[in-house]
Image 1 (cartoon, rainbow, N blue to C red):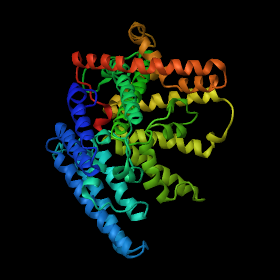
Image 2 (image 1 turned 90 degrees about the horizontal axis):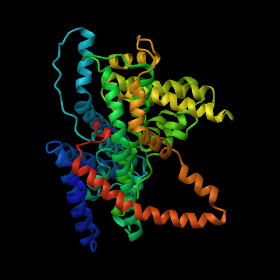
Image 3 (image 1 turned 45 degrees about the horizontal axis):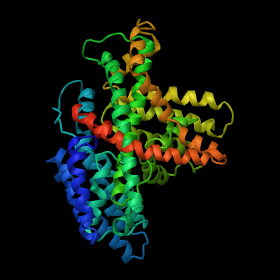
Length: 486
């Protein structure tokens, strides 16, 4: 079930909200109700793989109980038994990802090595959200092992943490320690509920008005270089327009989902951490990745990079090794294809160079550094968007004008005339304009008046825009979120 669907907005969500608040007299019943609703939500799109989700919950609950029990018995001192069960947990979770997400890719590699189809790919369907809920389950067990979290003795509470529908299928990746107390002691309020509706509505607007319109431009241009079909030479300017369109599309698509997840969480009394923080204002690629998909970056930092030694080790070879491992895994996490491997290594190279030359510590040339980040990110999105290595190479040749493709085409003007307002809105909304104006007017007499007027306009506009979005969905087509694929 998709947040931006009539079934969710008019049926599922109202029923769940009404049922949840009817049960306000009992937190236990509310949690069980949310758990049932979350499993129904997942089963709506994955009627078979909901069994896999439940199996993951049960196994990780048992392992967390065992590891937590061992730690408590030994006064939280290190023990070989706890280490063994932690290894079992990691092997189980990574193995589950490996089987359902990477089997076909591994078979493809083996066949390419031997130069023949010696193994028939099993074509295993990818369970929606498996990368997200598996990482959440792993973080819980690891935190229990480290002593950062208490083992959750109530299986229904742990199941709710792993399967809670707002962040189940496309994040943000929520650490157990950030919601451990909220599961039992959250305090929903009217202000929190209203702010949740507003945040959800903002995400819905970003999805429908920006991401879905930018998708038309990006999909049409990228389809011209779809290797294996009849391809068209894309003029360089058009190829760059497609790259920028996809860059903004995926930003507004994924950040919209995160906004909607955070908003839904607030409606039920949960506070989730932010997942995006104006990434396009960054002055380096390292800074960009700390502002983009924050929960994933934090996960790899906490559970891979720091345990390996991070950048604290004086041995530069180890620092490079740590960066390489993290970015290779980050790329592979996104998908089972060589293009995702190249995407991860692309960021590894940039961040390694920035680390060596200490770009983050340099001052001046702010505008040029912004331009450098935007261009580098747009290029990375071509790698991310390409379905095959061949398409990636073809598209890069077109961007560089090396395919006899020319520079200009009237299609660029056509797209800009039709979608110019969308591009303009995408650029403006990607910048902290609201924060800048608030800071600029804070100490001025007119500032308070504008703030009050702005809040009034916002509160008035949100319901109207929400109705507009629902009307658009009623007559529109199905548009899944990009990160459902990961």
